[in-house]
Image 1 (tube, rainbow, N blue to C red):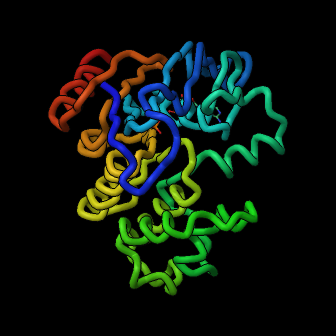
Image 2 (tube, rainbow, N blue to C red):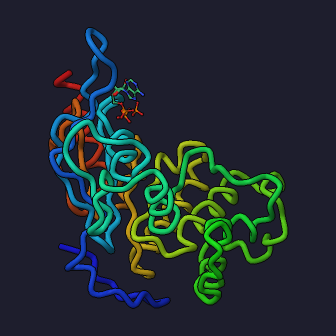
Length: 260
Ligand SMILES: Nc1ncnc2c1ncn2[C@@H]1O[C@H](COP(=O)(O)OP(=O)(O)OP(=O)(O)O)[C@@H](O)[C@H]1O
């Protein structure tokens, strides 16, 4: 089932059921050469439906980050294709790829990656400012409230807690209404309460604001916030789980440990 919650704050794009925000087809990624070759992705085909929150899980080294980086145009596939919407990434030169990442993809990283000299407000609108775009003031305003940072807009990142910094990063990722937000271990540096807040935000962005999120995580509790969990093992997509709970995800992960 595809999450079809209408945009409370207003995307005018068509119904998400028809859209795939990002996909990879027959994705192979080989690192190194000769004896040191690693097949990080070994023929993965998967689509990330628009309007959904998808988590990617799997044992360490199973290819989660590689899949995310290749799907997001941060790294290139050895063979196979990666699309954002209808745009095939390998068809783009470096300049176009940079523009696509800036204009159509949002990123949330474990380390927040805020600019220390800019205020919270400036960090949130940075992607738009770099693009020379004004952005949608109402949308940004709504985001500021969703992430609960209205009283911190003039602060610098160093004056915020880790959880607050990550909430700024979440707002920044959604500021330009990208086709998809990729989050790589977004709660990895947070205590569990701040982590829950950030995960709640990602979930609300998807369900109340018609956004699309793809998240790599080690944490079954984090994965349980998603609509669906994809499981990777040895560079292959080995399972999918709809409506996950932390217990079900944990049980699935334990099965990997038994096998290896
Ligand atoms: N730049 C690189 N050069 C060589 N090998 C790499 C590189 N990046 C990743 N790998 C290898 O590719 C495989 C998949 O790595 P990847 O980081 O995608 O896994 P992961 O599931 O995200 O792992 P983790 O959960 O530990 O972050 C691993 O064997 C890793 O050592």
